[in-house]
Amino acid sequence: MKRSSGCHPERERGAGVGGRREDRFALVRVGMTCIVLLFATAAYGDGEQRFAKIGDLDIGYRTYGTLAADKSNVIVVLTWFGGTSADLAGWIGAGNLYDSSRYHIIVIDALGDGVSSSPSNSHLSKITIRDMVRSQHELLTRELKLDHVLAVSGLSMGGMQTFQWVVSYPEFMTKAIPIVGTPKLTAYDLLLWKTELSLIDSPLGMKAAADINEMHLHTPAYIAGHTKDIDALMKSHEESLRRLDRRNYAALLRAMIGHDIGSFESVRAKMLIVVSQQDHMVNPAPAEEFARATKSQLLTLTGDCGHLATACEKERLIEAVARFLGTP
Image 1 (spheres, rainbow, N blue to C red):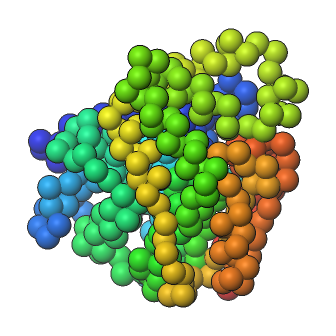
Image 2 (spheres, rainbow, N blue to C red):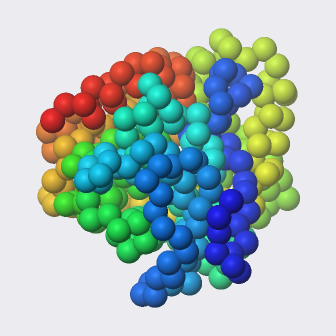
């Protein structure tokens, strides 16, 4: 692992929004002014954890696949709530969602994920989605020397960051693929996240937050039809969230609660927007409205898996993304 001296990241396993669900799916790891040059960009990414020092921030990232000579095949992938760049490994590889046999994949750890600067490992206390995107842009342009990428994408909170990218830096990418994300939260989303946040400092703490989180990952129909031992299910999710630092969890909740990209008149990227019709965790309505307003492509996952429809309908998702990326 390559990292800067004085940087002490915490490797935390993601299990929140968009996180891994090994107990139910057979999947593997589906959770500024001064730049210090730490190492040169490799032409081939091996998935090793790397760090860049950007001002007083440490930004973690991993790269996969060969970078084209003209740097035209870069896809930037952003982490979900509670997840890290390591947790995205199950979505990367030949023929996978992010095909590293064709593209150079750069996965960036969001501020607050416990790898990049976070409340648990730095002075950072307040984070916004805009802060995450700004730090990612600094990493790409000033550290990795990229002035344009083929695409930006992410699942769940990674999708929220993707929506922010297309308005903050509209000319930076040719394409964008937000997956089960949103340009802004609905009242129902806010009710969920504010409830979790209010529980963090209660006696029940992360246990209660984990149970509320688990309740919203799938639809009621899915839970009723696929869960034989509810106590085991609850315990599994509670243990997953217990690995996360409470301060980071709360900071990311606040970042999502404050998320709203505002006007999207500046959007220039060609977009494929993926929503889950029965998503109880990230309401699909704002993303659907965005797709209509910008005349973007819309892929609707219709099964009863809810927010984790990306796993249940993985092959359909992979095919749609591959087709979109392969079309001029």
